[in-house]
Image (cartoon, rainbow, N blue to C red; front, side, top):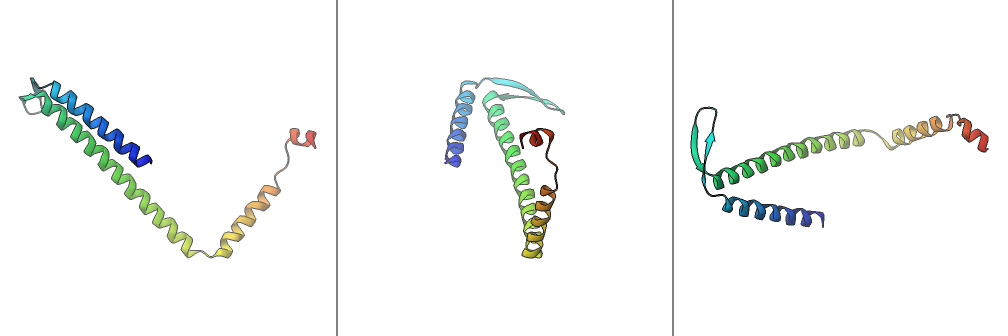
Length: 110
């Protein structure tokens, strides 16, 4: 359901950008580092939106790739250890929790 809402929002965003771009068709002066040119504003809007979307998409793909590598690394760590090691680790944590002294308010309640 979440992906359907994201797709719907993407279409609405694209429609708003397209309408905004079609309304603004007059030529504008675009200054680059090495020169300047006169370009219809519709092209400036569309290329800026496209470039922004590609940038966000590329950064998202990099994030997914990094997270997938971490998952594989953790899976290797889990497959390399035994169940006994996990049980022993959990038992050690339980002992540490039991050794914690109650606070003053907890002592007054008891």
